[in-house]
Image (cartoon, rainbow, N blue to C red; front, side, top):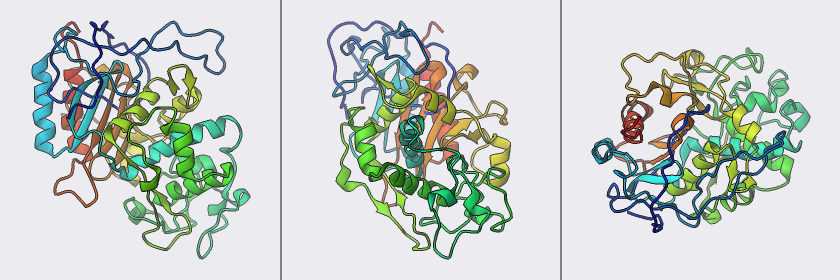
Length: 404
C-alpha cells in the first residue's frame, strides 16, 4: 500500500553519513520497491538552535509534510533494487504485517498497510521516555526524586527500601521494586526477593517500573498521559493516524494501582517518532524533545552482559532509559551485519511483543518501523532474533548505495 506523497523533481542524493547514536531504525520503501524518477518534498527548514549552542548547524534535513516522501528511483540514488526485493521476500516469509524504512528522510521501502493503527506492546515504553524529556529539562520532573517524596505507594504497601528508588532508577529499569505489576510480559519471574536489592544496583525488566512512570508523569504535569502524547508528540510530528479515543489504559491483574498506558499507532506514525529521535529531537524548526535527553536516554546504562544475566533478551542488546541499545561489547557470533559493521554504531530500538519495533540507525541515517498486527495474538510472531539477526541486516545492505 503506497501512502506516501510523490513530489516531482529529481531528488538530490542524501548520502549516508557517520554519526553517533543508537538503534531504532525507521524507514520505508514504496510498496513495489519504487519506480520512476527520484522525488523529494519541499525544502526543510534550517534546524533550530539546540540548548547550549551558539550557531545553527548548516544542514538542511528532509522532513515529511502531511505525507512521507517516497524515493521512487532507487537506481538513480545508487541503491540496488534486488536488495530491496530480497528484503521484501524476507519480511513476507517472517510474518511481518507492515514495515517502513526511511533513509535520509525519504521512504525507500514500504510493506503492508502502514496506515493501520494497532497495538504497540512494550514499544510504548520508549515513547514514554520521549515524553519525559521536555518535563525533565524544565524541572517539572526531577530524576533524583524518590518514590517516597512523590507519594508513590501500592497495594499492600511498598517496602521502605523500595520507596527510596528514584525516577531515574525506574527509567533505567533498576528500581529494585518488585511489587506485582498491572500487566504481564516482563522478567518479574526472575526478580530477587523483595527488599533484597538496593535501588539503582540491579537491572530487571519490570513492568511495575514502566507503569508507575506513566502515573508519575501524569501527577507531575497534571495532564493525562494521552493528552501529553497528543500535545507533545502526535501534533508536532504530524501524526497521520492518531486517534486519542482508541488508546487503552489497562489494569489486567488488579494487583497494582498503576495501570499500563498502552498505545495504538500506525507504522508510518511510528516512523515519525523514530525520525524525530534520529534528528536529535528536532522536527523542522522546532525542538520537540531536548537533544540532551535523546543523547542521554539512548546511551548504554546496563551492558548486554548484565541484561543477559537478569532479564535475558538478545545477546547484543543493553539498556538505556526505556530504550534498548546495541552494545558494541555484546557477543556477535555469526550474526550478520549487512556488510557494514559501522552501521550499528549508536543504534537503539523500541521493542514490543509479537514484532513491534522502532529502530534508529544513526550511523547510516536510517529509521525502521516494523509491525505485526495484534491483538488478537497473531499466528506468527517476528521475535527479536528474527528481526535483529535476519531482517535488519538486509535493511542495512539495501540502504547502502553501490558507491559505498
